[in-house]
Length: 59
Image (cartoon, rainbow, N blue to C red; front, top):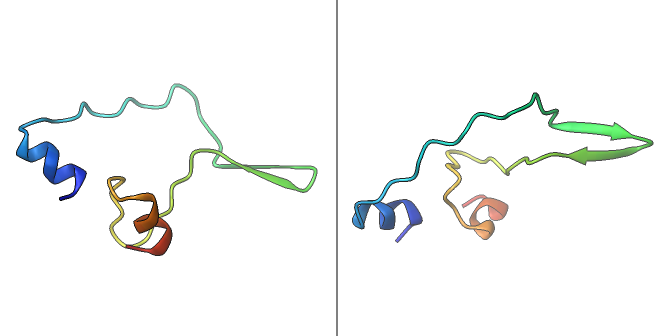
């Protein structure tokens, strides 16, 4: 059972996520290093409720 289905079964819902307080840059390159900020793996219909392994392996 997925997290989303479990929440629905318990008649629970999560509040809507808050909008970012600032204008964040996804990647900043400094002296040859790329600093990545809060990026999640996307493949197909990833909705944020998959496991780390599912998102890493593509489902």
